[in-house]
Image (cartoon, rainbow, N blue to C red; front, side, top):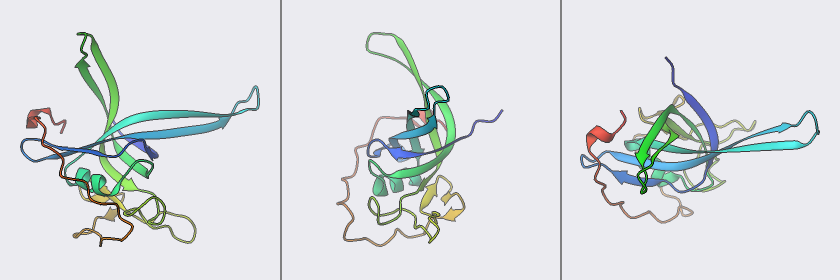
Length: 171
């Protein structure tokens, strides 16, 4: 069996960072992807938008929280998971989401804030990604964080710890 998802899209909300009791970081954000096509019968331009929840873990979650914000374009590589719960009325609920192995920043540094990859003269992206294995599509994460820039937004306060046991982490 093979479960691999590759998505490019824009964040629909800022990264929400939490920590397990053992100190593992969990970052969650929404991703919007779209597909455009021309309807063959009417000739109209059509667009389909898909919204997906994404979770990222460990150091990657902390880096995503530090550098990503609503509207930023990212490449996410991970696996599809089915989340199940019971709502307030006792009804079983479920939804699909993505557990990211790699989150690569696609915006250039000048568009949308600090931390993105740089584009070459042909418009190709040249890095800026971080994965759970500290690699982002072949681009190694720096051993020290990038230098602070004057345009960088103020750092968010340290998020509160949540009551999640290690058994609830899906890896």
